[in-house]
Structure formats: structure tokens, C-alpha cells
Image 1 (cartoon, rainbow, N blue to C red):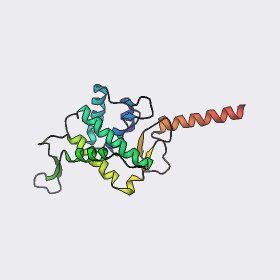
Image 2 (cartoon, one colour):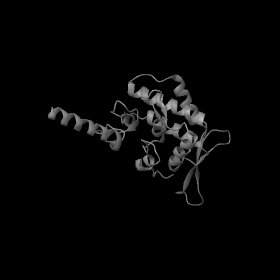
Image 3 (cartoon, rainbow, N blue to C red):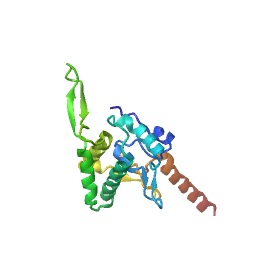
Image 4 (cartoon, rainbow, N blue to C red):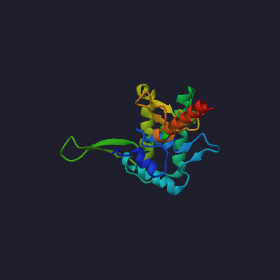
Length: 198
């Protein structure tokens, strides 16, 4: 699978945030929890299709997941990630849902042809499930179970933003430099010029 998705690609498609190392974070970020009511960036089926098309380069080939199943997985991810960041226990249903999605499509490695270095992962959909949702859930479990990577999970420092990201650079505090980072710079400049000018 290719992983060639960039923040520019995502923003050109109309999404403020994306192209994080894990699609699970991108999915969680399709729900803006700081607005009242919360803003679902993929509530519209056409927007959801655009989002899944963007993510397709990073996921196993599969039909577009059902909207209800997508919302259920996203709610579990959001609760699990927020619980970690807030130092609280997640809802038991979030853990159960995440595990169920990960188990819904088992995988097995397969060699391709006579060259043992060529291999692929087979997604077993014989009993239902969606490979994209299963892959997202599995990657989230890997992150949540890896303390060395989990310490990189952050929420944007902008109080008006709920976006989550992995900060491989300790100095990263904004979800995106061109949105929240820029807003912070503009606010600091405004405060400095108005404080000095008064």
C-alpha cells in the first residue's frame, strides 16, 4: 500500500486536517468536538465519499464503509484517544467496539509467485466486515498499546480546535501550521501591536 497522502491533498479537498501517520487519527478528526453542536465533516454522503477516496491510498482495497459503522468506529476512537489525553478511563463500549472492528476482517500473509520476497496481506471478508475499518481499528490498537508512540499523541493547543495528531517533533503543538499555528501567530502579533500602540 502506498502512503502518499499529504496535508495539501486533504486541505484541497476541503478538510482542515489529515494525512496523519494513522488513518485512525484522520477519522477521529472528522468530528469537530469544540463546536456546538459537534461538526461532522463526513455527515454528507458525498463528502464522506471524498474522504474515503483520499484515504484509499493508505487502506486495503474495500468498498466504502457503511456510514453507521464509520460513526461507531469514529466514536470509539475519539473516546479512546480523548481518554488517554485527559487521563481518564475510556468507555468500556469503546474498547469493545474497537476490538470488534479489528476482528471483523482477519488477515493472513500470502507469498506471491515463486519469489519469496514478494508478499501481500489477504483480508478475509468471507464473513462480513470491512477491510478499511478493520485496518483503521488494528492500527489504533497498535498505537494505544505502544507507550513509546502513544506519548506523541496530542490535541491541538488552540482551545477552539479539537484536532488530534502525532507529534514526532516535541515542539509541535498545533494541528496544522497553516491554520491553527497561523491563527496563533496572528493573535500574538495583534496583541503585541495593540499593547505597544496603546
